[in-house]
Image 1 (cartoon, rainbow, N blue to C red):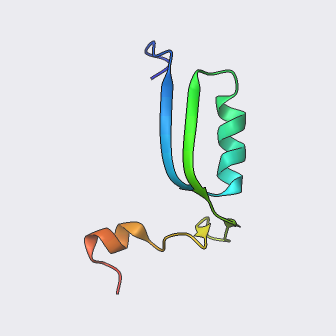
Image 2 (cartoon, one colour):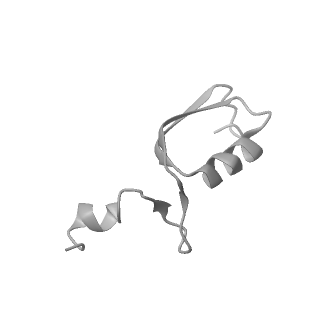
Length: 66
């Protein structure tokens, strides 16, 4: 969006991990981006999933989880 000329961007994030917040802060520094996060969970596990997280939300949405 910024590359196409947007000068005021807001990203709404439902759930993040501290590792992701650090990356967003680093990558978005100096840009006109505001990030609003509802909740920050504890960490990422060895598979890169947020802990405790929501489980596999995609599987839940599309009926693949039991």
